[in-house]
Each structure stands twice: as structure tokens, then as C-alpha cells.
Image 1: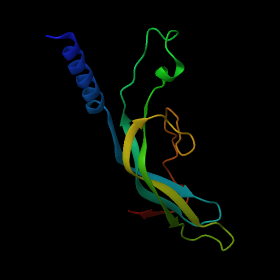
Image 2 (image 1 turned 120 degrees about the vertical axis):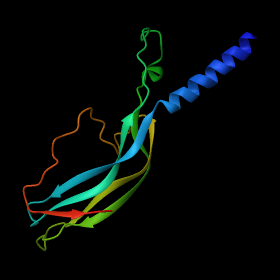
Image 3 (image 1 turned 30 degrees about the vertical axis):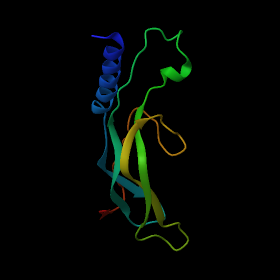
Length: 136
């Protein structure tokens, strides 16, 4: 086989495999919103981006440019923001809460302007006030 053709097939296969091995999709998630000035904790069902993105660990890190060492994360491709009124708030309290809804996801650089780029999720999935559930 011609080396150029073999190289082309190998490159196409690698690019196809890279995208097929990435499992970065919107998943259901519950956000708990609680404010001292409000009588209720609001549990909002929404979607966030979650999943596995192909990464690489180069053995020759010192020889490659810094841009080649960037690891990709599962992040938003298309996102919309919705607002909810938290019930039972005092009149002076800011009673609206805006939250993201992932419409589609992609593997890419984590942008700290709109994403939390932490490795572990925080354990704040609870309410201390009575709960009100809101479904999308």
C-alpha cells in the first residue's frame, strides 16, 4: 500500500475514533437554591454537561509547545439561561435565580468565564429549608 494513502487512512481513523470515544452529553441535574431571606429552597431540574473526553499524556512534554498539552473537558456548546422565582421571599430580597440549561455539549477547553472547571463536584445537593420542586 502506498505510504501516503496509509497515512491518510490512519489520520481519518484517528479523528473518527477520537469523536466516537468522547461521551460528552447533557445529563439531568438538580440545582438546590436557598436564600436566608426566602422561606423555601428551590430544587430545579435542569441539564448540565457531563462525560468523558479523550485526553493524552505526552511522554515528551518538554519538546511540545504548551498548546499541545491542553487537556479537553466536557463543556457547554449551546446553553440557554432561564430564571426562576424563589417562593416565599421577603419583599427586599432578590428572589429570582438564573441558571444554565445545557442544550448540547462538546469536548474543549474549559472556559472559566462561564464554567466551573473543578475536578470534583461539591456536596451541596441538599436544602435546609422546605423544598419546592420545579421541573423544566
